[in-house]
Figure 1 (tube, rainbow, N blue to C red):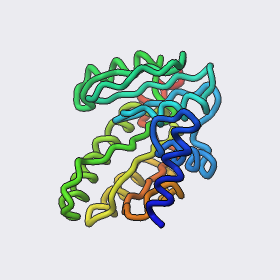
Figure 2: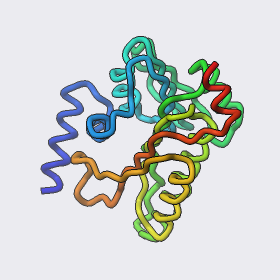
Figure 3: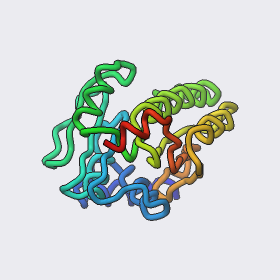
Amino acid sequence: MGFVRKDHFHKKAKKEGYRSRAVFKLQEIQKRFRIFRRGGKVLDLGAAPGGWLQVASEFVKREGKVVGIDRLPIEPLPLSNVTILEGDLLDPEVREEALATLGGHAEVVMSDMAPNLTGVRVTDCVRSFELSMLALNMARQCLSAGGSFVAKIFPGDEFETFLHECRSSFRKVRTTKPEATRKSSSEVYVIALDFKALPSEETESSD
């Protein structure tokens, strides 16, 4: 049955002009948690191949802005409200360029990043945790007060630590496994809502 579901979402994505089946995960997240709004500013971390950029672009409409960052080149999208930056998330200049392009702090920071899988569960979970923490730390620097954060993670021994870290920065933290997730995958999406920005960030984001 797993292959049937995979084929269904893969074919559906292709038919509807999306770059990956992961778009349906983000659509379900939006339906449940309402993280995007018209005119919003969105930062997509590890954005290749660009499926989540397409979906975010639709939700924020023409008035919004979406910036995607990845070390891998992403084929340009014919969307006026989407900007793609090629670079490393650890590079402060990349972060500054992203914020400058958005014109201020983001209202949504999202990450569908996954490590190159080794097949060794413990190793894969640790690497997934490290990527998720990288995304969370980026969100802490780039989100405006009240903003939302979405991250994929493979739950392992560090999962509760990641949830604890999210709860230290957000007032609500939820987990979900969208329907479009492959049956064989252990991945879970963490949805963190209502970012508790530092006073200096609150002031800055209100400009």
